[in-house]
Image 1 (cartoon, rainbow, N blue to C red):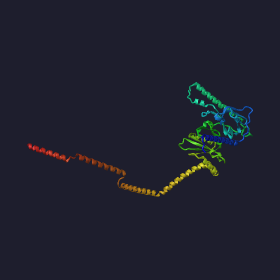
Image 2 (image 1 turned 180 degrees about the vertical axis):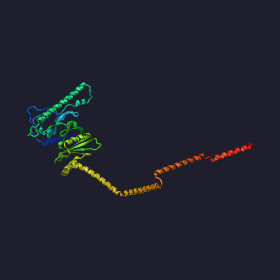
Image 3 (image 1 turned 60 degrees about the vertical axis):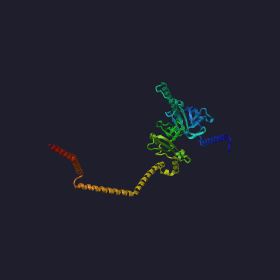
Length: 455
């Protein structure tokens, strides 16, 4: 079939793709709602509880990138975030129960971020808008983007106005940090006990503050970010998407690309859930790449305090294949020692390979016996010749003089021969030539004849 107007087919194709996209979103939302764990209703505190105003939420529930603002308030058994200018009636508030929170992070202001934030990692996902999530964050930007651009301009350190502005900004940030800290302390008092039979015992969770002094940089998701160890996790919360590694769920930490000459290395975490029956192996491990080598000792010390199994190697590893083989041969590998069997076994194989190479070298040596025998015969002939020369020297020395006397005697003979040669040369120079004698004799005869004629 050939259409006369191509625009009609293009329009139909666009409509089909839009319907397909809508169906996929609805199917994803329906599946997410089916997987939700039912939660008890929030118990509202009749008296006004701890509250933080004008916070923003992540993930955002507003359309077209508009930021969602609201107030976070603590109630009897959970938090409620009241949304300002909600896009729909079912998004006027978001409830988070205390017992559904697995990790609660409080990150004050620092030099790497302009955010003061509270982040919650949930045990069971909840719906925010049309998507389910286990990570919810409430944050406040103490420095807007426009102000941060203005801060990049060159400042005069002696300008009193600028000094006062900087001091006011520090005071404002310090006040915001204190307000967040006060809110966290009051919420800690409202939390139910971990053991209901012991009301004065430990709470169901404590606020976890990342250790800024142990900060290091790495690349967990296609960008270099600052990573902070905390009491139970390794986190990056300032930029989105957030990165959280729950160290209690990690089965193995492996350092990759650790070899002389490398300025950085990679760190891979293997989660315990890779042994689950329905686990997707590609989601059971995470890698942080390009960590500077100078942070190696710090990272290793942090992970040792968490009592993690740690190994290291010079190459990157295809973890999907390793985990697949581990699950397939789980009983044999577990009986042989688990991860220790895999990584130390490879080293033993390399050593065995080196020993095999040495054996091959011995075999090659034994295969060249003829050459070795020829070299032995040559060495024997040389030794015989040297023995004969040595015996001749011994006979000469036995006849009269030793080596020193022979040298002196040779020098004296050379000296005598040299003196005789010089004397002979001197005699030749002093002896008159025969032609000269004849010439003198002829001249004397002519003179005698001349005298006789005169007479």
